[in-house]
Length: 193
Image (cartoon, rainbow, N blue to C red; front, side, top):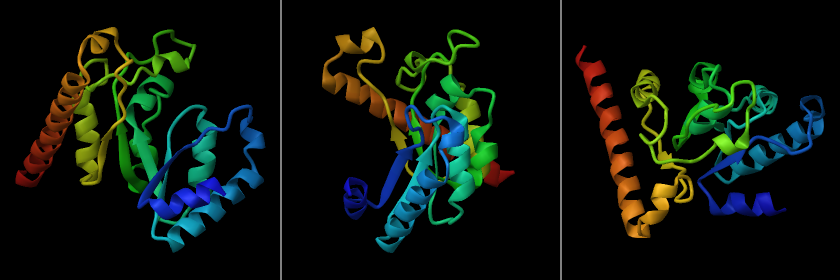
């Protein structure tokens, strides 16, 4: 009931696709039917549902394979991609269905072979190891013009906690503006070619 109530309040709703204590094989028909029912209801209300990449991967794969309606789509969380699934090109996999972004930085997988939620630090862009030129190139190839949402945390780095909230938000705004300008410049140079 709560999810259906949220749909009425939104234009676009993002769902991280992960169910705790749910093995991939158990993320079966019942869960997929629930997502389909929610998507059908959302479409009636003109609300796009976007599914976000987290870990484990079989869940996002199952939902994206099942929900075929192009009205709904994919939310690329580049920070999650970096620390949970750096070996997978999410844009190659789901880029044709990209509708929105969650943007943040981190240090990637800090313990190879051990994917850990603690690597998901939600740093400001340019404070971690994500290659932002690569990121802009990925979006430019798609000619992406949708929303760019920072999903950052003032608790992500100890240095942030020494800033006032206004200083932190100003810093976040400057980083978002830099990314936007990089994307516009890349898209403009692609048109010139």
